[in-house]
Length: 529
Ligand code: F6P
Image (cartoon, rainbow, N blue to C red; front, side):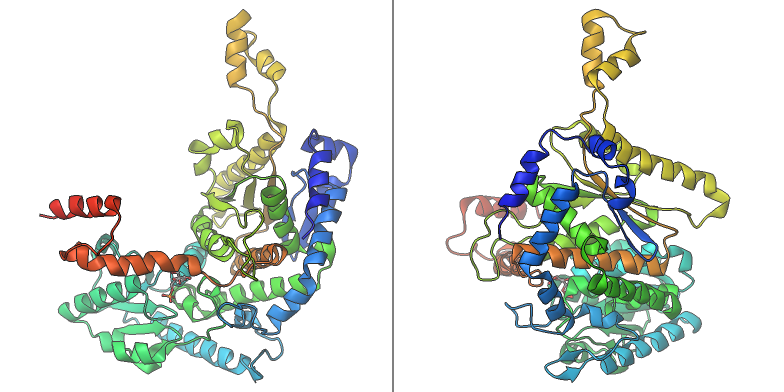
């Protein structure tokens, strides 16, 4: 990939100010936006100008985005270290045509499973038998359903949903406290049905239920592609919802992994969530050039990380119900693109995906925004805000939220000069003290951000937003020449944990254990009592 043209644009823009770009292009505010339905992405508060944007779009073309995208949607085995297709898009291809994997149309199976989920969810919601639902899963089998359930709280009219993920017994113990083992439904969500955390928690909850007079045979369901293992665990096949190995864990919320949110909000709202994603898929496949929202989202990412060298990006939803989105996107982006080699196995020349982090606004403002505004490192920010909240009687609070969101991106761009700071303080200080105090109030400004805006956080909008981020990850992966759909980097730690377990339990430490781990083990064993 030829990055030199982009480096030239970086040098050309070395002394440019974002505000200056607005001064020289009166149409910038509208021209540096992409819109998909009523989801709008404003990337005008970045240093990307016409020339840089054209070069970024050239990069996409040169990387073969059109061909790669067609291959993904067509079910080609683009996850080529596992020889798997990547077809989470099929899970929301509600009224689309056939999708072939090895010559077989997967759509009838997807529709049938969705219909079974809707029936099951309907029974649980209306049957009056259950007050609580516990989803036991981790990674993609937890972050997606937990995030969607929280985001769609205004639609929640089913039983309460809880999410247990951590193998730390504190998580399951705190969750079970106060629940009735006879009136709780348990969903064990694990694609592989081997994940140690999930299986350990599932056994703990099964014991709790049995001891409390519940009936695991009737109160357990499973979401998995491993039917033999769900059967061995004793889960009624009628309560098992499967999906193909062509859906990666972090892309799986659109199918059976979405069972908990479907029970929480109902099949109709869940359907609207899928429709939003399907609309984004269509947009991603058909919108050309700079009109393509996920492509432009990806290109802002490439510009800020690979070209400008900013190591992280912050996800800052001004939407409390998206509080779990930064964590969800951490897995989506960092497990997908946190890679060190290209598809051919050659080391990457630069870095791959950035570090993704964040928290909802306005809370973050009172915590880490100090660094974002005045720290020496630049953190590109991704803001999200709705025109309307869901609490009409609290509209004044929503307007305060909107003002804060807009003010933050404005402050990042504008900054405050030393002269402006001096002028502010002139009445309070003089001479050297005026100068000293003023320096603490300088904001460098010229800090980039993008802003998503939408009428209201609905199931449809949420589907659009999440699908846009999925496609961003895909486009960035294509440009970098990496496989975004495997996750070999999680394996070594799992293997070593298994090998260390006997020593933690009391056996002699394994041969050749490094001195630090040996000493830590000894310290922890000494204090186990
Ligand atoms: O360890 C990483 C991972 O494989 C993720 O990719 C996945 O989302 C998570 O574990 C859970 O896997 P499973 O759904 O198979 O339990």
